[in-house]
Image (cartoon, rainbow, N blue to C red):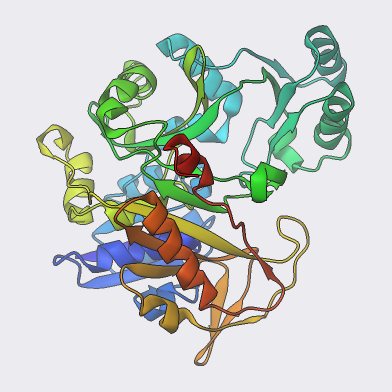
Length: 427
């Protein structure tokens, strides 16, 4: 089986690593890939947004399965285009990918499906947005409607911060076309957790819970990023509650999308806030999260090709996920300055040394190869991910692996997993 993975991040390196283990896989391509995928697959110099070129390559190489990693190609219709070419593609069609591509569309679907979520107003006018904000008052959450690489959400705790956030969206156009429409939501208090489900249009099969860390600095301080680390399982959503949670936040959306004539196939990711009033959905993603993908795939013992094939063939109800009992935790190493301006081209050393540790993997993201050297090429450079007998052990192993790495002008959070340890009474 020939497989094409689309994307260039740590998620795509993790997908390549996992798919490489499947006996049916004979060739593995990644477009465009990174320094890590170059070591286990063939990198293809095609942007993830170039749908015609991706389809042409898949046809040329007689690819049997396409696995998109990021949201952009899905929202641009890569699944639709691959289907038209007769090539199986594991991801939702563009009509379903709007669940991530448009927060206002996702909100409308949630309301139709009866999914609990924050109250919100949707605005294209600054005047109307200001009036709504003045009426409700801070704290409020300001969201760009479209895709903004995980950075288009601003939690504004004061009225001054609300005005500044609306300035960024409407006046400074900091998020470009993504903020042509802006959502203003009520501020929800609680602990965040992620629930990802394999979906075949009718059936949703939940993976274990995971918790991402969006803010760049310890203690959830600083601006939001694409993700600074994640761990699984998250004590706030234990295994025995997964199925019941899917009944609340995932399966109603599957039913609603099917009712609209656009069944959802792929990964449906619900970002949840566990409030005093129960779980509420903050957002949906239509693919594996990054960095949640890395610890989740470390824990998944199934043959990933088998699970994906069951999704595409509409027989997910025959599958049982086999999950590693141990915990997994990943810590992201970034270039200093990220998510703002940052340097590139720094050599990264110690990857082999880190992976000599038991059950430690280094999934590369913003890297490229220069001969035998690995150089940084992006903001999020890599994610050191470890399995441990429990959360504390996984945390210890991941940071031990990180200690073996070296890269100038780098930064990372030192508190990944701390919220989970506190909830368990261990910190």
